[in-house]
Length: 117
Image 1: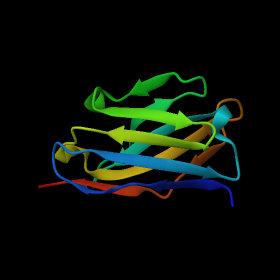
Image 2: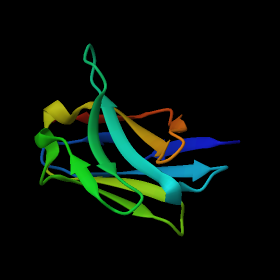
Image 3: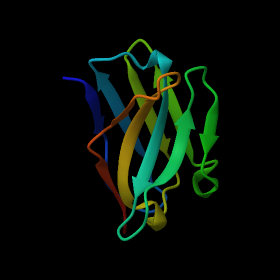
Image 4: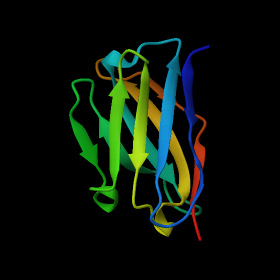
């Protein structure tokens, strides 16, 4: 089956860290731009971090310096390392893949991240 599967969400205290992973099945990520989005309750989905196939990155201002996106071509995965988490980071996080030429898109099912004491 072709798709993306996220893992690594959970409950963490403010100031803590979480590492989200996204694994692709049925296709190879090397020609896709990869991104993490998030959607908090009653808010629109927003871009958190993006990495092109060549390794160029882009981050939302709200998480710069705290989150790091990376990809492993051999494992066909992308990760989001989240440090110094804040309550406002609480959301469902979604992995996204978009082919850089044909614009085919895939979404993961989402993983909940809750930052609370």
